[in-house]
Length: 287
Image 1 (cartoon, rainbow, N blue to C red):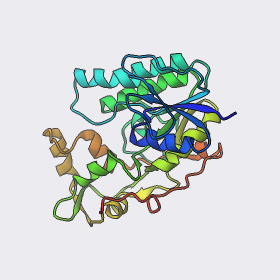
Image 2: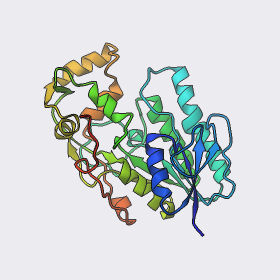
Image 3: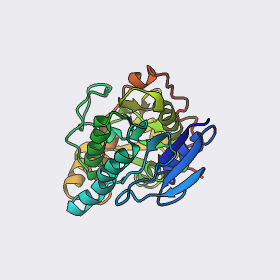
Image 4: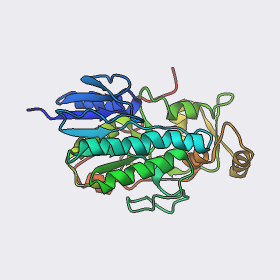
């Protein structure tokens, strides 16, 4: 009999990619406020309800509060309600079932970094409610003996997060980026989907998930946006952050300047191989 997999957040960018991939050879149950692209829909509000996992064999958890809003108690509480409290409800309902909990590389301690990060790099001192609550949520998943995946900057066709943020740096047909070029990891949504399904049989623990090689930041942005890249002095960008710029936050600055490269050897050792790269994903801001 086919494995029946529950996928939370299946109406979102990453969740829908996982649901479509899973539906090729498995029964899919999409848990969330809105239906996913395949399978059965069961309504679940992660902030208030326990999920219905009746008849489900395994769970892939992608539902999350995401973004980089203004800090404060209201923001922290809103993110915690989904990323921590929702996780606790899901884990209680899942019991001994296999769970793949999709986290983020934003849980890692802010850089700069001297080299590729392994999964034992400290996961603390996060700058945002997103990073802090995802770190707290994954701790619950790890304590429950589940698998945690840490992708970085997920991209792909239909991306509603990374690509719109990149478009904001374009002015007069030029992308303006702070500081010098750096190497960094990105994760194609297809690679993340493959990892989510493969990881259902992995031993408990955290695993980095990214494309097979790191990218030049400037080359990647130029390729995706289709415009040349020029640099803004890093000191000027940092000053804008300190002055409370609405267009540039400390977290956003880190994302393009800290040179975060993920070591994916642990996931590769389980038999997972990234099959998609930036050049083959079809992700582009151009018409």
